[in-house]
Amino acid sequence: MSSKPIITDIAIIGAGAAGLMAAITAGQRGRRVLLLDHADEPGKKILISGGGRCNFTNLDTAPNRFFGANHRFPTSALSRYTPQHFIALVEKHRIPWHEKTLGQLFCDGSARAIVAMLLAEAEAAGVDIRLSTSISAISKPNSFHLESSIGPIIAQSLILATGGLSIPKLGASNFAHRIARQFALNLVEPRPALVPFTLGEPTLNLTQPLAGVSLPVRAKTGKIAFAEALLFTHRGLSGPAILQISTPWQPGATIMLDLLPNSPADFLRRAKRASPKMALRTALSETMPHRLAAALAPTAIAAAALTTLPDRTLNALAQSLKAWPLTPTGTEGYVKAEVTSGGIDTGALSSQTMQARSVPGLFAIGEAVDVTGWLGGYNFQWAWASGVAAGHAA
Image (tube, rainbow, N blue to C red; front, top):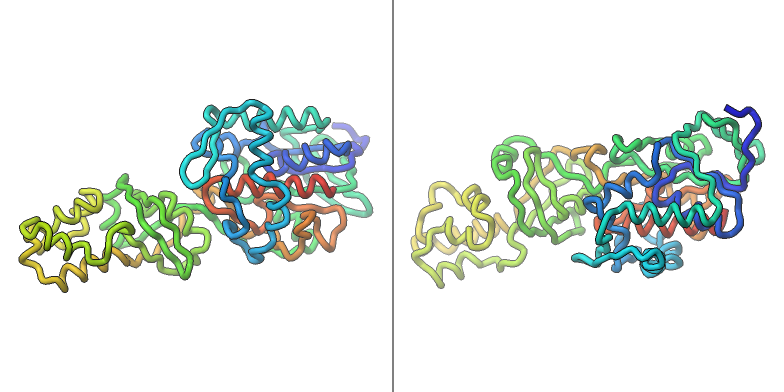
């Protein structure tokens, strides 16, 4: 280990999506950039995202697709670095991509192509990347002084890009939160987001045998709702609709599930008029998976012909399926969470530059900040956009 300090213009801690983008942007401006990460390879979260194909952005990116204490905070960065900017970079490197549902863009091949692209851009910009490097202390007498496993580092600017607490097996830590506290920046309490729910008894007794069953639903908490697929699991609920609603959900709150979002409220009454001799269980099976229909049809009347059942009974059953209240016991936690909500309070940062108002030269970007996107490429677009904003300003 060298005792002579490494002198640099900008030190960036975290070689994930946001950190790489900030490093590239700053390097292209002629700044000396030192990019540090405790992991043994860069972009680990990029590599596993989108089932290994990296859902690298979303065409529908807009500030209203993000949660955080200040809903307007992401507007500036997102408007200056758009999905089209990142698509242009992807096409410059001739990486084939495709659009899936809801504006989600994926690589045709492996997510490794995105990491390789970012590393090529970083190399062209003269970025010095040091992996397997730990930081033991940071101080700011004038410049930033970092004590690290590769020796002391002195930098004019410091960018925190270490992400949140989600997926600890990839090396996630609370590093950015600790440094924020050291420099007296407020934190919004971090929580797992885009995460499956756990259920308790007696609900779990009903849902556990349905593990593996999936169907389109509308999940609602408060005034926020998402219409996507739900997946029953051995421990509770997952699938895109559940991951989405988990971010605004508050512990202890009830979520309302419409299990038949594409069916009218009187669908059983209509079925009775169209096919009076049809069994109730059969009528339900025509609108939802068979295993679910069998589980939700009341045992006493499951085999009864629709014509034998009063309209009020059918309407009450339909209503219970259109508005099924569930109160999760909790979530699967950071192990299964795709992102962390909360983090460094945006009130402490400039939305133009991502710089801390009270600490000149200190920046925070990406998942370290209290900005959490919807599922489907939004969090990557925030990483690119916030990284570019800091990279231009540092």
